[in-house]
Length: 331
Image (tube, rainbow, N blue to C red):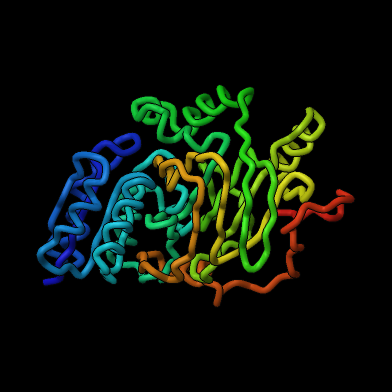
């Protein structure tokens, strides 16, 4: 009989897994697995559990929020495991699961975990740490780990919005030198993110519609600090319309990006505090983990399955003229 390790966070999200746990285990067993169950007890518990494994498993499945997935992937990479990973999302936003087409309904996600196909997915390295889908700094990035879990459980996305609105009148600004692919530029930024996701904070369309997960490159979005109300209005308008305004933003793809600043900047990795840093190197570890996805969506996640469309504009450097036709429509 095949062996499975099932790691779950009993406190994740709204607790949707608990009443369905018996059915989930039944699905696993009927699929031919002998299941070892481990409920995490504290932060980093999943990492430590995987690193301390004394036997081999045919499949590892985790259930929880983005943080639980991050810990599980980190533990597997640190241990050097190539075991396929199934994921049952049970958090508040579940950005990465939504991007991979993994259902938010527990029974359907459990079925995908055991009956789907392994998809070789990129993973990010943040200095010596790992992240699965986003590394970010600046405005709102501390909302997830500062918003109380009880508040997130009750209010869901609204908890993030309510907590985030408290910050809008106290915008952080960081002067950062950015280097990637032989190019270097320096500017003042209020927000930046390096992502491998089609959804951030539960909102789709902010990154773009051509994101793939196995191409060895991240999507990088850097938002300049507005200097006056007019620039702020332009920025907010672009965000609402899901457009890249090259006068207010930098947008590019890269497999490695270096960020350097004179003062330490707090970062978040997959919604969890990633420490404060003056220098950060973010690298894409191409196809580092195999995640179970539905067979009918696997091709759409891959660079090989992407339909080639008209080339995107290179918004690597903000345009000086700011014409309306120099915007990238991300709808």
